[in-house]
Length: 76
Image 1 (cartoon, helix red, strand yellow):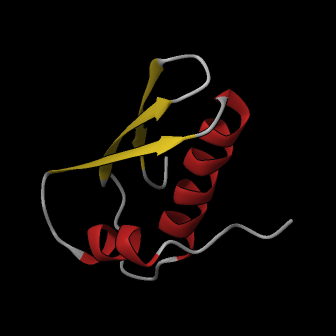
Image 2 (spheres, helix red, strand yellow):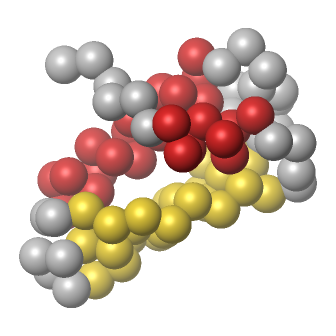
């Protein structure tokens, strides 16, 4: 299944900042995991991504009533 394109996330990807923080929610743990994987793939595909670009993904999981937090550094 190809990654889902999130137009709002793309706005974050094109910005040049030290750390990018993405807040979102998902219906269950698997959806949260897939959402983060899709975001990482968008970062990898973006031609303006530079080595060392840092992202922090914070995803609220409605089913578990918890938060998944993951740090990602591009092109490592």
